[in-house]
Image (cartoon, rainbow, N blue to C red; front, side, top):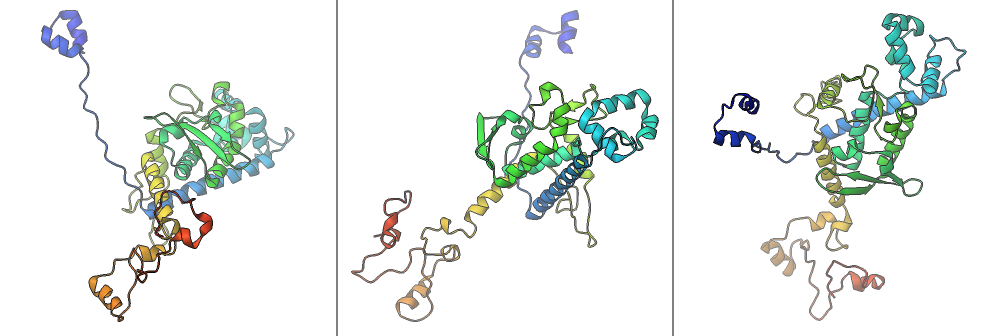
Length: 351
C-alpha cells in the first residue's frame, strides 16, 4: 500500500523507500517438538478411523453387488447403485441442478447424497483413510497428500514399496507393512468407481474424490488434501462417550475434542515403533543368555556382593555376569555356538 502511494505522490523519503522496496522481514513462527498421543488417545483414534473405514467399505461392496439393471424402478436403491456404477455421479448432479432438489427427491425417493451412497467415498471417509494410513506407515502428511498411483510399486503379491517425497528432503521409499498394504488395497478398491469417472488428469492421483456440492470455484473432482477446517469439523462430529462417561471416539484425555495434528500422528507412530523394538525382546540384551528383565534390573550393591562372596544371602549377577574361578576361561556366545563364529558383527564377546 505504501509502495502504491509513493508511486503516485512520491510521499516517501529515499531511505524509507529503499526499506519498503527491500525484502520482507517476517519473523518465522517457531514450532516446538510434537509430543506423541497417549496410549488411550491413540487407541481411540485408530478405533474411530477403522470403524468408519470398515463400515463404508462394507456398504460399498454390498451396494455394488446388489446393483440392478435399468429395468428397476428409479425409487429403488438397487437402481441408484446401477446408475452410479454405469453413469457416474456427474449426470445425477446435473439433473438435480436442472430440476431442483424437490423434483429430484420425488423422482428418486431420496436426496443426491443418498443416491450416490457409499460407492463414491465422501470426504469424511477419505479423511479416515488418510489418518489410518499415516498411523500405519508414519509417512509425513505432505508425503501422504501428494501420493499418486505411480508411487505404488508391487514387490511380489503381498508387498508394496511406496515412494513419496518428504517436503524438506528428497524422495524416500518405504516397504509397507502387511497392515498398511491391506488398507491401501482396500482404498484402491473402494475408490475404483470414483476413479473411473474422474477427469483424466486426476485418475493417477491416489486420493481422488468427488464433492457433490462443489467448491467455491466450482470444482467437484478433487485430489487435494482436506483443509484444516474440514478436519476439525470431522473431529467435532465424532464425540461420543459410553454409559460411564468415558470417551470412545475422537476425544482427548482432557475430555475435550482431540487436538488432531497430522505430524503428531507420525511422532506417535515412530515412538511406538521404537518402543516395540526393545520391550521384552532378547535381541536388545547385551548377553543373549540373560532375559531383558534381568539385564535391565538394578546393579547389586556392595553388601550383596560381599554376602555372595562369603557364601551367605542371595546374589543376582550384575551386567557382567558371575566371574568364573581363576584358570577357567570365560565362555561367550561364540564358544557356546561355534556355528556363529565370525557371523556376529558389531558385538564384543569374551573368550
